[in-house]
Amino acid sequence: MKITFPHMGNTFISAKALLDDIGVECIIPPYNNKKTLEIGTKHAPEMVCLPLKINLGNYIQAHELGADTILITGGRGPCRFGYYCEMSKEILADASYNMEVITLDGPNGNMKEFLERIKKLAGGFNVYKILKVIKNTTIVSKRVDEIEKLTYKIRPRELIKGSTDKVYKTMLNKVRKVNGSREILQLLSETKKQLMEIEIDKELIPLKVGIVGEIYTTIDPFANFHIDFILGNMGVEVDRAVTVSGWIIEHMLKNILPTKKDLRYRQAAEPYLGRMIGGHAQETLGNTVLYAKNGFDGVVQIYPLTCMPEIVAQSILPSIERDYDISILTLIIDEMTGEAGYMTRIEAFVDLLNKRRERFEVGKNVALFRS
Ligand code: SF4
Image 1: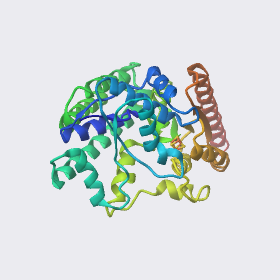
Image 2 (image 1 turned 180 degrees about the vertical axis):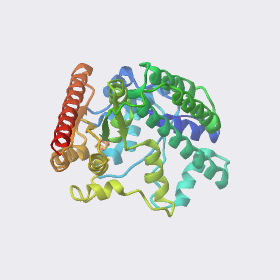
Image 3 (image 1 turned 30 degrees about the vertical axis):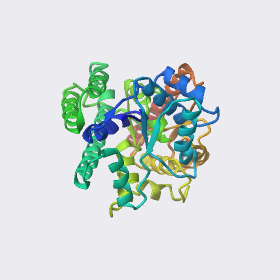
Image 4 (image 1 turned 60 degrees about the horizontal axis):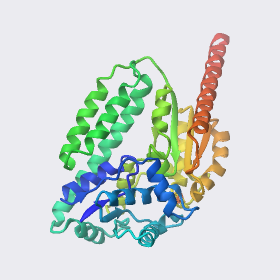
């Protein structure tokens, strides 16, 4: 059995750690690129969401490298995510790609069932070994997210431009070649050390922008045109509230463990959207409120064209913009999105945030002078 999985930003690192540790050969699809999207678009119905198209491209590219099985996480409605497992199976079968699909569905309170699913993958592993593998995979996902967050802080402050990108890209190249969670964690701690050694401007107070929206397009750098790199290299500190480790811990593990979920975003979203409508709409709204309360200068919402939950969130965001006086930019992505237009909108948004901050500083100084 040679297993592949959707690339989806750095999710592939956690998937690799899991499969390496249980001793299953994994085929990591190439980093998402134009070809991946082209292949996915060719096989998918036109109106399906962009992430499914990219995922299909991943599976087919990995199949060409020898993968015969796909590991994906399942989901339930109300949005289209609930259909993606079955749709992927049918599209691949129609296109004569003979691949088995294993769905690691959300456990929804049933620990025994969840362990059975992993056991199916892990063959002869006993429960204790499986629990250890799950624990190590979770630690890997947390460390990867910590590295990403560290780059968000260092990139806008670095004295030699490009230093952060260089360390980070080296880590991404090396991680495909190491084996198992132990070696991955070792690489991540070396990367953290190298990032901490980058010389930075400690006095700089950069603009701060929160990134919200549909999980795939916020996490995957190909889908969002490397928005964290773009903003960071423009001197903006970014933050992304929805993370891979957050998804594993909050949506997978806490569904089976008797641990309280982190519902801060849901409480913050309550006055605007009181119920879950699928995808990450509540996170988008709640996290926008939290960013505003935490003094961020702006928020960027990113989502794939036709994503129902994010369309609803977009229609509510102007109320938060007005209530909290925070600037919000919405970017909608599909396979036709051109990089130049996308860049222009981001540059204009950063200009706007800079002007707002200048106005605020002038206002503050005038008030000080008068008092
Ligand atoms: S959240 Fe949006 S993009 Fe993701 S499956 Fe649902 S509708 Fe599609």
